[in-house]
Amino acid sequence: MATLLDGKKIANEIQSEVAQRVLEYKNHNKRAPHLGIILIGEEGASNTYVNGKINACKAVGFEYTLLQFAVTITEGKLLKQIEQLNKDDDIDGFIVQLPLPKHISVDQITTLIDSKKDVDGFTNHNFGSIVSHQPLLLPATPFGVIELLKRYKVKTKGKHCVIVGASRIVGAPMSLIMVKQGQSTVTICHKFTRDLAEHTRRADILIVAVGEPGLITTDMVKSGAVVIDVGITRVPDTTKKSGFRLSGDVDFENIAPKCSFITPVPGGVGPLTIASLLLNTLKAYEQQYT
Ligand code: GUN
Image 1 (cartoon, protein in one colour):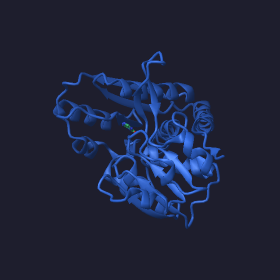
Image 2 (cartoon, helix red, strand yellow; image 1 turned 90 degrees about the vertical axis):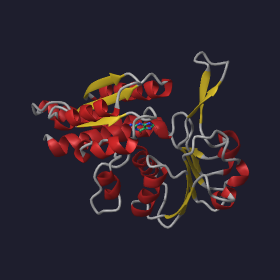
Image 3 (cartoon, protein in one colour; image 1 turned 180 degrees about the horizontal axis):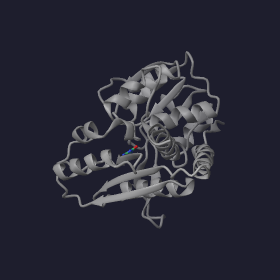
């Protein structure tokens, strides 16, 4: 049976470390780090994620400001808001919760965020820094995954890492982080990949970030592999009070017995994404304010 990679436990460790640092700054009469969060519309999943981020800020002693807008906000108004946050010396970092409404371009928005305050690590500048000797603010989810692997002492050097999903937020930066920090050999698969199973079966480390429950079945995983499931999809479930449960991309029940390490969903990668956001916000604060 695999060792469970307990993201919640590691995220709690990181939270305690961040809280300790914040306390030290406050004891030296410095103000707390301050995170801005832009949330657009009423999408249930985004609301849940933002609540998680706010609770984490409270837990570590950060200040936070939530700016909420109707789904009808124009791109121009949002861009103005971002310019204001860029100029605001009291805000160390901010995020724009995704997804955005269709009439707003994610590329336009991320291009305008000041890279020093880009605590999601979405700007081209921060993305590019992954391959430099001095990485800046790393994309939160991939940063969380590498941190999880490091803290569980999972060997990555020289291993074959197969990533399923090539998104800008997860798959693409994950591949660079595994090459540079993990020193792994990397294969990236995406929706156009033929014979997906042929690739996934060769993985020593399999990272899946697609958002398709049940995509990865037992026959697609090598015995002894490390399996990281980044997918979090709401699946209707009448036995739950909320009416849904969260599901990853991996058939956890059947795959766990044959692999060496595996992340659960929920409680795996999700909490690490928030922990990375805290680490990035602390770093942005230290670089601009202290
Ligand atoms: N939506 C899903 N994941 C993320 C994330 O890491 N950051 C932001 N801003 N939005 C998201």
